[in-house]
Length: 366
Image 1 (tube, one colour):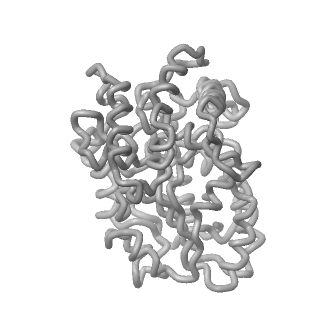
Image 2 (cartoon, rainbow, N blue to C red):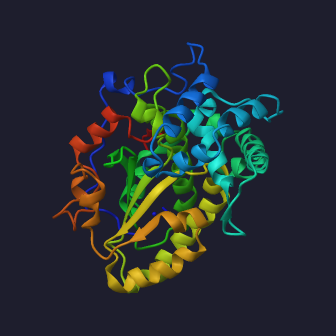
């Protein structure tokens, strides 16, 4: 879910992060200079989870690994002897990365039941990673459209003209900001009320880049390695993101335009996110829909991926945000910020940089 026609009367102020902040964010593979014992890390996570009382094993990760305690180690061993289009990067060896693919195949969506055969789960998870590495290597028609040869090239070299970035922020504001009460990163979106075909590809690229940064940096930050992680962190792996989608700008009069934008994003989600970024969404809250649009949205959501349907909740107002996020809500999404569609304040943009929440793309002058 992701982008309006309005030209802002006042464009957001561009904030350039201080030099010291530009290098303060955790880097992909920051532990790569130290040999990591992933097998021991896998075992520590499983041990921490299985030591919990059954009633405390509430997350899907906890339930899966308590049911299949050898899944991580077996999957890792299988991967080590499997030819891939490109080798796994350091962040892809992280236990939570492997766990994403296992969880994605735990449930048989056609039969609407959980698979019990671990060898089948691993086999299907392996197929997913093989396909993902092929896609990442540049073997897909999308890379020509994106103008980059592969994922590393896109992530490291994508640039975005400043004027386009400003327009997209106004048309379809979205960005990471802080964590929720459960410690998951929060991604805020102000859903658009118009459609702009020429901006759909830049929007999709930006979503992919943010997905990628979540894997390369955010997940590593919230799931530190063995020897650093606390018992609570080991027993409660954080894989996905909490999505806040604010529909305050949407009315019955703009539903056709919104439909075009949303179907474009759903198509992208099915093709890229579901396939190559499984378990990216921890949960989603669509707020400020109003009673009529809540009913419509509950119908529309049925065309979304099954996991998205299970983890998405729709609300007429915004009160649920106060329950989900511990008071650290951007002003534009807070109480009294209903008419603010200008984006984050200067201080909030600075905090994004300090916390490593800012997007990975490089902005250039128009």
